[in-house]
Amino acid sequence: MKIGVIGYGLRIRGVIHNELKKLDPNFQISGLVDINPAKHVQVRQDGSENVRIFETPEAMLEAADLDGIMIGTRCSLHTPMALKVLSSGLPLFLEKPVATSMEDAQLLKKGYEESGNRKVVVSFPLRVTSIVQLAKEIIDSGKIGSVEHVQAVNNVPYGNVYFQSWYRDEEETGGLFLQKATHDFDYINYVLGTKPETVAAMTSKQIFKGTKPAGLKCIDCDENRACPESTAFRTDSLKEEWAHCCFAKDTGNEDSSSALIRYTNGMHVSYSQNFFARNKAAARGARFLGYKGTLEFDFYTGVVKVYLHHSPRIETYEFTGGKGHFGGDAELARCFLGLMDGSMEHSVSPLEDGLISALLCLKAKQSSITGTFQEIAWG
Image 1 (tube, rainbow, N blue to C red):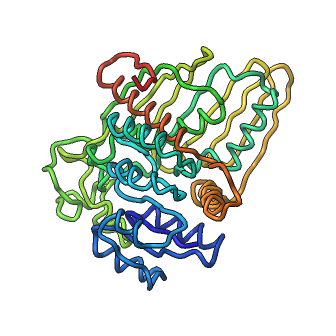
Image 2: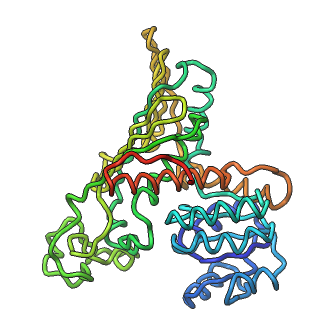
């Protein structure tokens, strides 16, 4: 398989080398569009010595004989780059969030519908993990009854990245609903099989704020030996990648946020995410409650439990291994290859669902700003 890459970012690089090349040893990067010359060097060092470098996606699409395209740019470019690719009809692997503004989301929806290209894999690995697949199987069987309430949480143990790296720029990321909750909203929507109707949300910034000078880096701070968030003396790449002070005036981003989501069938979901929990306080998962029972899981522990409400029985399932978003990356890669070689007709993570998740995140952000319930609608 020969692919073109638009934006050779860390995430796309990982999917290519950790997943796609394992599934298809002949997989190769034939074309690259990236404004950073260092990425041109890196892609060749990574084994794509014959890659052709193009200045624009249009030039690559016209000149290269490709089986598919992968987009791994910064977040704000996901929509404009996807719009350039969709009309080509080529299978597309698109990083999340699929859009960072309402305007982009509407443009992408329109472009997607007009293109007729349904061979799009949105990078939502959680929905295709073994854990979520089992949860959906059990819930669809009726064992716990119809789901009438969901309690979901994401306590992020590596939250520094959103305040010390480029993610601190909210203009680039669109905020942390779009960066993190988009994954969780997607797998919840997927398991429920119903659509969100309204959302009310709230954000807080209580920890990662302060009076340190804007632009301050850990290496230049006179408190870098005492600060628990300091990266000044790390010996790995994070010393440079997470270089900025997270207690400065310009950190950006909330450090916790929550949302209440009502669905079309009348039930609701409560969701909360936090970015200053650490170590064993990490948690990511949900409780799905029906009249007959409750199903819960946590990605970090790899444990799924089913509590039967009218019987003193608890069913426990344990998963081991599953690197790369708890095994989900491998499934996304398998689907992308299948769309390219024709062995699969449908995406396991279609753009329709990516758009719904982005819309929900954008409406949640708007709700947190205005203090109002927001309808999950395109109008």
